[in-house]
Length: 178
Ligand code: FES
Ligand code: FES
Picture 1 (cartoon, protein in one colour):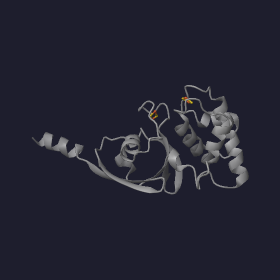
Picture 2 (cartoon, protein in one colour):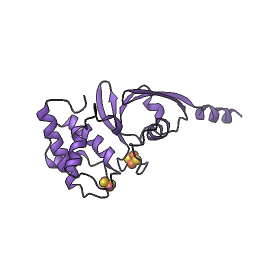
Picture 3 (cartoon, helix red, strand yellow):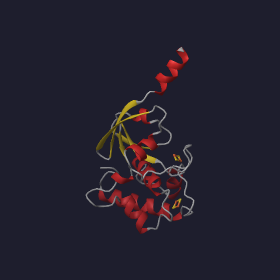
Picture 4 (cartoon, protein in one colour):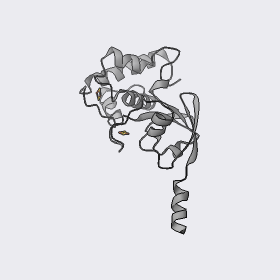
């Protein structure tokens, strides 16, 4: 009886409040719910993709605020309850005032995608990396996005796009994420 009570207690829904792209979302969710499912199914932001659910592909990458520092994280690798109180940026929140982010523009201009399935995660992983290394070499870009898989492009144009975006961001003098 005591064990059953304990199991019921562990499985009880918990309130999770998250700010995604500047908007507050608050839902009661099971503790086992992954953050990626919270983003897609509860917040309805389906630009964040799921390719594996096992931390391999990076399709679920989003940016999360850690004490004022944005970092790229794989949202299938975190429970929604662990994100309670956090700020998140998904691909839907990257464009500002109707203007694509330099990374989005560069992926467009350099044909950095084919089917597009990996693209949201790839762009957010690139944003996370450029915040660490704003002036990367080609090899460094390849290393920086090595946690993200693309099954179509062969990576060549993705790398070109990220290098072009890095240059544009540097010459604009603006931060990667404003
Ligand atoms: S869905 Fe998260 S790493 Fe593949
Ligand atoms: S563009 Fe298809 S998986 Fe990358």
